[in-house]
Image (tube, rainbow, N blue to C red):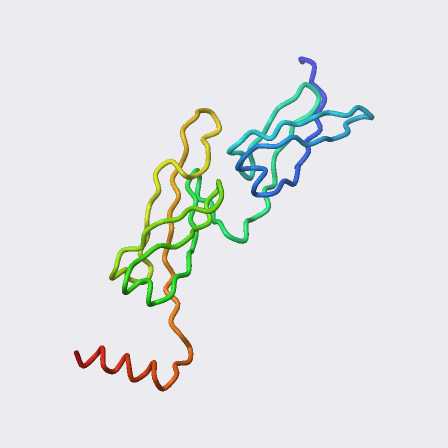
Length: 157
């Protein structure tokens, strides 16, 4: 029989969603020695990095705003019903900060807008996935008498 190599130590490193998206540096201690771990931009749950003495995989914490599907990101964005009907502009959260986008008049609930290349960076290239914005239309839960009268006039016209 051949010689068996000793089992390498495996670490699961907990990282924040933003660190997985943009990359980061983390420090671990292995057998008394400190190592700087580079989290590559685009890392995902289960992404592994092999070192001589140990392996690391990442445990990515979920985002409160974004849902990740591979290299694509989905964000639910709430807009008032008046903006959906009349059109206008809204500010949407993206991976790179807030972005002003136009809302077309007559936008329907659950409409999805795709922003090409605004998703997660691919691990092994400079390509990016896409960002999908799903409009969630917010209707008022209470209307004043005047607002009800105006809506009735609209329906009758």
